[in-house]
Image (cartoon, rainbow, N blue to C red; front, top):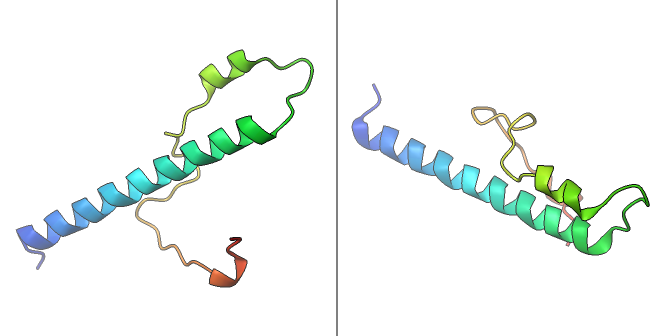
Length: 73
């Protein structure tokens, strides 16, 4: 049986994971904007349609396994 404290820790952990995902996406968006050369037909107005808060490819209740050999430093 799950106690109230265990549920609280689980929710806090999920909140931390969500915050990390949003932070990472914001950094990636910034990196791409700074380093990429946009096609001639694209303007900076496109940035208005980009958000780091998108969940189509995130499974919040799934199991994620990090392969440290594939991490680029």
